[in-house]
Image (cartoon, rainbow, N blue to C red):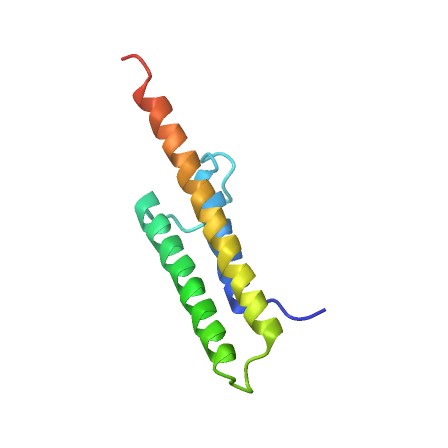
Length: 109
């Protein structure tokens, strides 16, 4: 098996941070350093990483189309699928966030 790519490691690290932030205080490990990270910061970082994946995919596609011998078709396809998956995940997060927002806004006061 091949080693885990840095992009996947970064996404996994972000997922672990989000998971730790959503756990109640009683469940969190005591060794965890308390930091304040807002949802907007996490969402913005995620958008930036999706954008970076799409730009990388586009650059690899262009390089392959131009005949760059250092870029293989498999690299292009993998980068394309990574960017597609990252975008789909981001759209799902956005949809869930909007559903939650609409539900909160429709609650009687």
